[in-house]
Structure formats: C-alpha cells, structure tokens
Amino acid sequence: MRLFRTLLFALAAAASMPAAALQPNGGPVLQTNFPDPFVLTYGTRYYAYATNANGSNVPMAFSNDLQSWNLLAVPGNPDAFHDAMPTLPPWAARGRTWAPEVIRIGSNFILYFTAHHRGRDQQCIGAATSRDPRGPFVPQGTEPLVCQHGLGGTIDANPFRDADGQLYLYFKNDGNHPSARRATELWGQRLAADGLSLIGEPVSLVRNDAGWEGHLIEAPFMVRRGERYIMFFSANDFAWQPHQRLSNYATGYATCTTALGPCTDATANPILASRRRPVCLSGPGHPALFEANGRQYMAFHAWATRGGGCSRGGDARFLHIAPLDWDGDTPVILPAPR
Image (cartoon, rainbow, N blue to C red):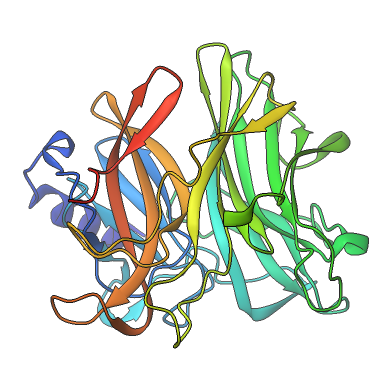
C-alpha cells in the first residue's frame, strides 16, 4: 500500500494545470473504455470510477488537473489495472458490475454499485465500504441493498446528502429488462446515517413519459440549488446502432420541490444530446456532477468516434468532463453547436 500511494503521489505531482483551466469543448479527457463515470474530489486529486472494463469490477482513473487522466494500474505491473472492488458479494456474478458512485460518511467511503444477481437474472444494487477512496471496497451484506424484483430489478444508484445531513439514495427500476417489459421510473428513498440501509419506502419521482426519452430513463443524479432540487438523468437507448447517424441517448433534468419530490421534467429537455459540432458527441449520458476549485463540472460518457469525423469508432465509451453553469435554476452544459 505504501508503494501504491507513493506512485500515485508522484504521478499527481507531475501535473500542474489547475482545474479551472479546463475548456468546455466537450472532447474526451480519457480515450479508453470508461462508461458510466463518477468523479470524486479528494484533496487536490480527482478519482473516477466506471462500469466494469479491462478485467476490473470497478476500474478507476485519476487526475490532478481534470484534463490529464490515467487509468490506475497495479504497482509494479502497468499492464494490470487496479480494481476498486476486487471481490464481489456472494449474490453477484462477475461481468455486469455497473455505474459505481462513492460518498464519504465519517471515516468510511461507501461505494454503491449495480451487479447481476445470481439467482434472479436481474441487476440489483449493493454497497461496499473502504477507508480509502481507492479501495479495496468490501461489499456489505449477503443480499442486495435494494432490488425491485417485481419491477425488473434495480440499477444506477446515486447517493445524495441534503443540507441538513439527511442521506438519500436514488435509483432506477430496470423495467426495460426483457423479463419485465414495464415502465422505467426514477425512485428516491432515505438512507440510514451509516449509508448501509434504507429507511421507509421508495418514492417514484420521474417516469419515462416524453418522446425524447424513448423506452427508458436512467442514471439519476440529484443536486440541490438553493431551495430547489435538480435531478439529472439520461434517457433512450444508450447504444449507437449501425443504422443511426448518431446515438439517441441524451441527458435532461427535472426540478423537485423536496429531496423526495414531487418532480417536474424540464421543458427544455434534453439539455445534452448527440451533435456533430463543434466536437462530435454521440450518446452523451450518465451525468455525474462534482465540484473543483470553486465551480461545478459534469462528467459523462459518449461513444468513441473515428478520426476527426463523426462516425462510430468502436464499442468504447470515453470519459468527458465539462464545466456546468447556471442560468437561475437552469443548468447550462457545453457551448451551443455552431
């Protein structure tokens, strides 16, 4: 562990550009497969977590300036990638560990993750703990933290701490699972103070009922702005199908009066969608907000493109980071296409 930390500190010290210098051009900051990103600010460093890739259940990347990113590797073996959660819980099968997000509670870091339930053929949400944001995170409990079996399963956990300290967890029922064929909704529920159990009943906040959303909504991410609550989310088919010029996947938001609703979709949705200029974006989604040097940023993924054009570049989804501004309670992401 000492060697691991020494290596990380040396790499971080080599970077010098401040986070505020990041330009909002929408280009990828990490050109390797890194879907469903979440960024944690920890001291002067930034750690990103992603859906399983490169043989890791929870791959990680790090940066000191938000522009130069590298995957975390195993010390002494640069060809082996670090895994923040190398051991899965007994209920989970390898290969479908999705959308990790991390929150610090006291001296613990809690990682919420989605994984495939061995006995149910559904995705469910679990929690794991560590004293270090790089892990190893140890799964808690012998069963999922939440799994809406009657609604197709549950994915895309998002923890949120309100101004009064109350914790909440947001998630999506996996209604588009082939076995369910149900509507998809975004739900909220109170978390216990240690973040490892849920309180009360889940509340439905947002439902896929708009044309741009297609057959699903997912990837909730809640923030508070003054007395308002803003829930970002993505919608439509995440894929870039061969017959499509660009993916239909996009990002919008809803405004909520409390942390558990009611919520109203924004009329301007989607606010982040595929485009060809000034930088090609295909399927930008799975938003995650974070703060750095006194301002907010949004991390998201978009499909890899080929060369300097806007054609499909393979099956990878790259990490993008862009400044986020506000016009009142309206979020403003990226420059307008020109």
